[in-house]
Length: 108
Length: 116
Image 1 (cartoon, rainbow over the protein chains, first blue to last red):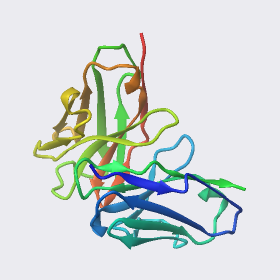
Image 2 (image 1 turned 90 degrees about the vertical axis):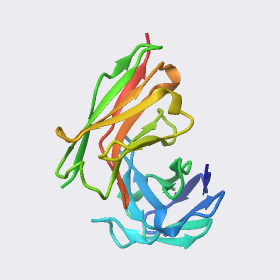
Image 3 (image 1 turned 180 degrees about the vertical axis):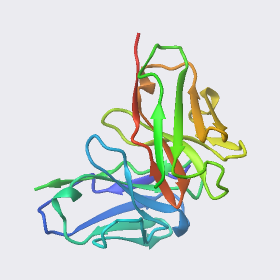
Image 4 (image 1 turned 30 degrees about the vertical axis):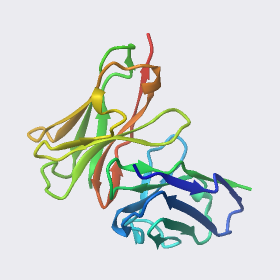
């Protein structure tokens, strides 16, 4: 099983600041099979990024993904109030599908 | 626009079977491009993949749950189903269904509580 470790656990930032979220895999993950999700309180997760780099439909361009092998990053360019949420990475290149433990982006 | 909707009992007794239905609209469950899956999230915790099914009936499951899980599909109704047997309080969670392709597209989720 591929274990995904996200860091930091919590990121305290102000609106307008940038955010960098990390996802590290215990084994190499094909870049085609790494995705990122945003989950706001009381809501289902929402797909942000798939295939490491590709934004899902309707996702603003302040969200970008990068990485390869075992190290992946989600970058949020300038935080808007609606961006304060929990973010998960997920891999689907190897069964079982697995998720990271999440990074909470909170208002400082 | 694709929509997925979970339905089923919100309360299940310990040792009984949890049964949920996912109804897909705005797209065909018979598409060859996708798997259809179930994921759960215990209150205040992270996400756990349960298993997935292809329209032809092929399945794969999380080894941690495999002995208790069955996922099935009814293409005529554009639905797929989850059965989780011998539930305990640890199975209390929000259960999501999702389309699995280029990332996961999620239903809104349904809370299932295991309690007597």
